[in-house]
Amino acid sequence: MGERLREPGIRPAETRSTTLSQLATELPATVLARSLRIDITIAVKRQRAAVGDWAACAAKISRRKKDS
Image 1 (cartoon, rainbow, N blue to C red):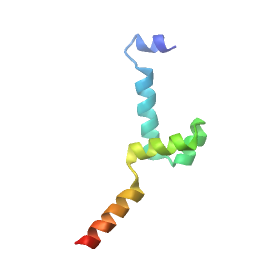
Image 2 (spheres, rainbow, N blue to C red):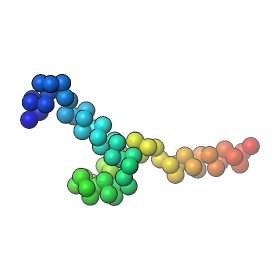
Image 3 (tube, rainbow, N blue to C red):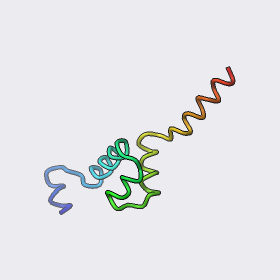
């Protein structure tokens, strides 16, 4: 199947990765993991890579305001 997709220029690995990243921006990690039957740690890593770690970002902004 991979060969058939590559003939017209579709790259299965890149398409899968892009799709997974897009889903990670729209779904909670638990839903992503259950829906795609992937390990929760993989779903969390994908989500952090796609949208960032908002808790870390919020903590950084919080510290920055205190230092001002």
